[in-house]
Length: 155
Image 1 (tube, helix red, strand yellow):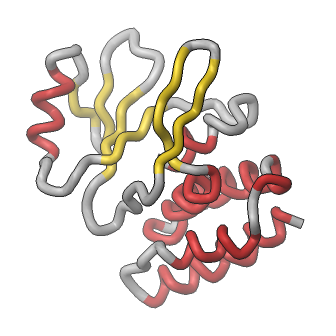
Image 2 (image 1 turned 180 degrees about the vertical axis):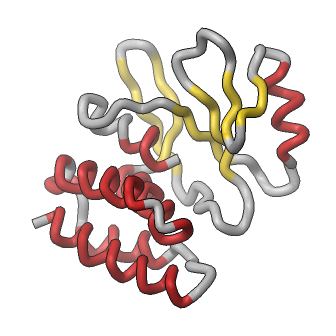
């Protein structure tokens, strides 16, 4: 959810290729697949794609996916939509690094933090990072690395 949500705040910073959705507890992948099949999307690994679609769809759920804490409404010329608040979006970007050692996720989080640093409160970002629950010692170490790099990006 992080990159597509963060792009709501800095749309020219990063090319978003997927749209992320939070799935409530109790709704499984099969149910999601049946729903999006009605509009032509099919499973493709973790994503759902459709020929000719500009974006792939990703549905977050499960123990290693940081689920939406607080949503805000963004309004633009095309209408309004709900997304993560900025700090949670940046922390969610970093969660890919914490959970799966996905370095690109951390780099994206750093880019958004640096670009939006005047709108981010350092202590709130650290709090959001600590809401990420690493599965093991290596994940806790990566969360510490992410915290240091994102604090540096805010300077």
